[in-house]
Amino acid sequence: MTGLGQQALISIIVNLVFIFLTWRALQALQIEKIIRKGRVVETRLLLILLTIAIASSVSNFFLNYFFWSQQLQYLF
Image (cartoon, rainbow, N blue to C red; front, side):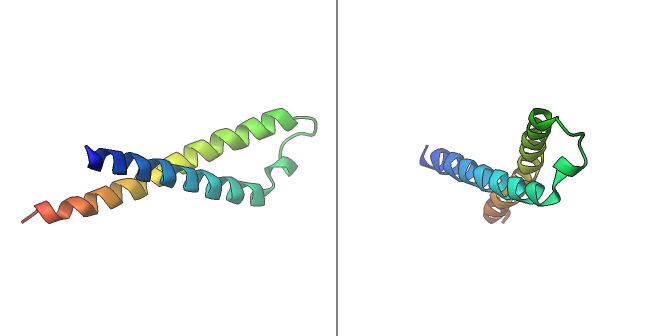
């Protein structure tokens, strides 16, 4: 049971880190310049949804890779 708790904690931390990194990266793109003026709420919502989608995909990749590498010890 301890292993499951550790995996959950690692997953939460990794997801939050990638959400933060993705948010910062999307802020650097300055998407506001592409979207029509007066659409601040819609632009922010788009950025939030893009952040969640990208961060979720990237964190899932890294978490899968991490957990699979831990399971390699059972190969032999």
